[in-house]
Image (cartoon, rainbow, N blue to C red; front, side, top):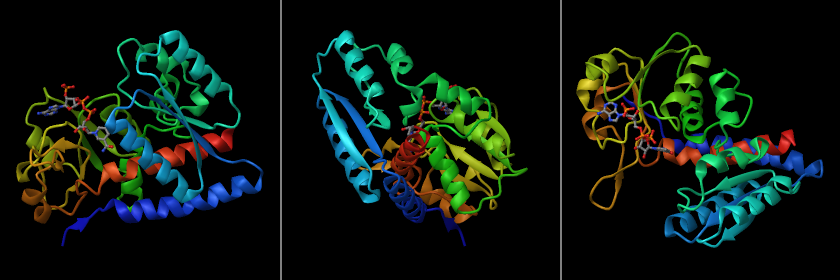
Length: 281
Ligand code: NDP
């Protein structure tokens, strides 16, 4: 019987823990607060912002929003970022991307205070992950994958993990996290030869390619744990993962669904990072 690695219990357990941590911080006189910087009013950003605010409320985290004009200059933006960086009542910063073309993300990722960088934009935080130091603010999607594996007691020590995708947002940092937990990691990409064969021999198969339903039963075996990071347009108004769930679900040991898997844990990782940031300030 395949184990469905649903996000819901992972999120519930993490939130219960966070509520206790937030209450403890409040008892010390600290009010964990997230600063949300939004440039313009893209419907996606507004939707995501409301979602984050609601999520923060469920664990007692306060929020401050900084809605900025779509045409804001780099100079004005820098002033706002500096103000939020220096504001001791804000412990973490979330900046929605993509940014309009006049704002240079390459510059901004160095501007954000690494201590408040809960979305892991700053190269300083990513660097720590590559050094094997997982004590800082972690990139949310890879950390969500790790939270699911941990919650469901998936053994990583000595396990063969195949990560399909080598982006700096998902594949590479996730590979470092798995390696830190003593998995033997193979990183695959679009030029990997015999990908089905490589994946089939792994204990843990992680799909992060952005290729709708590409992973079918040729890539898995009966003992595979399949983690689907992909979020793709299914073409029918719904989303689907990189894994062909229906083709695979009865042929593996465990699998994350889409929706209701990795993506649903990601926001809770943001809250986790915020509480970590607050504790360290
Ligand atoms: P990128 O497009 O930046 O990277 C995709 C990676 O997959 C690349 O390394 C690419 O290889 C590899 N790849 C593409 N096609 C193939 C193929 N046919 N075979 C093997 N490897 C392939 O994507 P992201 O890392 O940003 O995102 C990956 C997926 O995860 C997307 O579906 C995205 O929507 C989703 N995502 C989900 C999040 C969540 O919270 N659940 C958050 C962020 C992303 P190469 O380097 O050779 O080009």
